[in-house]
Length: 120
Length: 106
Image (cartoon, rainbow over all chains, first blue to last red; front, side, top):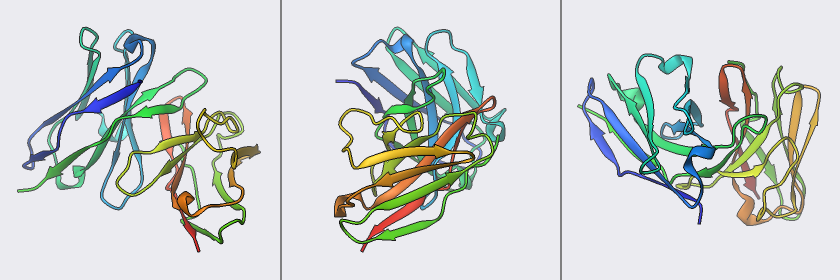
């Protein structure tokens, strides 16, 4: 079945970096993009950015420009999201989602989420 | 990136109809999408392209659009529909979510 499986929970200190993985299966990885979405405790959903699994093109939320990098490894059908210079307000559940793209900008498949805790 | 505005909460009794609105200036030009999120779970797409329903989503979920407002309607609400609901759209800058609406089934 079509699914996205994310890496496990992380605990980081302020100023450190975190890299979360998202492994796709059940579909042709390069036919869709991957968006990353985060959710701070008790808060709403925040779109972080998108990467094309076809050619690696990216589009990052302005708020995170300069701190976030999204990449893909087509040989393993895996997407990665790296966030640098972590702060306490980066504590959140991070989701990857299949982004249908084009005129249908829906996220139809979601990973299970990865909890990232930033604490000294 | 523009904003999408949702009411923080909506309450309905079982069997009644729930309507959750989402407003945004770009909605006349961009499709809207709706997600249901239950505690501790990832969101689930329930409506795409304003009014289309993915396979596996019950028929009681429907979507509509009028001007700068889109509406998610849940007919014959059931206890299991209690959840947070988020609208989402897109513009040239990327994707944007509304603030979310907590649906309480009384």
